[in-house]
Length: 74
Image (cartoon, rainbow, N blue to C red; front, side):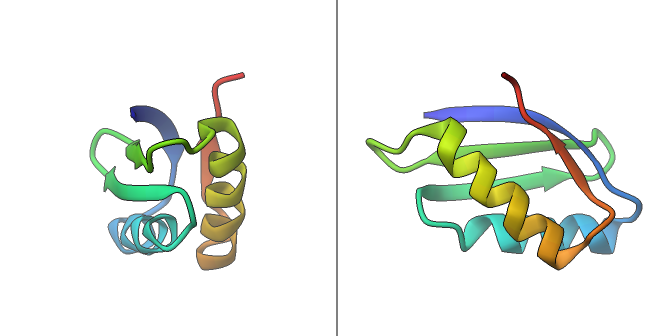
């Protein structure tokens, strides 16, 4: 399953840090951040619950760049 999320990040370097942090989270098969569009595309592992995984992705991204934000769809 793939989903797209709106993000807020200050620079391309920070966006790259977010992408790398997201890729390391359990349940994420792949992640790509587009700094120009302020979007993160996430592909989830089979059987993963996207809402739960994205909470962990947000936490990992906050560790990489405390000023970043991912707008999770509720």
